[in-house]
Image (tube, rainbow, N blue to C red; front, side, top):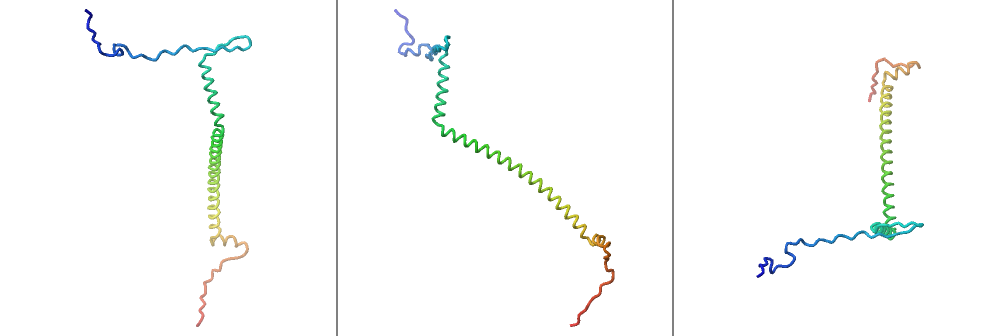
Length: 144
């Protein structure tokens, strides 16, 4: 008599076997190309990569208008950045010039205030023979 099978009634997949994994990929076939008199073998992966490159170039040429549009946007972006940097430098240069002009103004104003004092004016007109009148002022009263 045969021994009882403990897996009786269960499917064949669960009999202690691991689930089947993907089979290993086959070895890469090669293509041969002849140039001159020698034969060169090129792995098929390289051929696939070259096809991917040609697909990318086909996509680029198919969407050339969009590529030009993106290129145009990049040019505008770069021009805008350069223009803004130039404006910032110009603003800084003008702010420096304003500071210098403000200092010149303050200096000229201080010199004018000094020269317009009564004592300074007397010193300047003394060589001309002009002096101040030290006599007491007289009050004029007009009768009504």
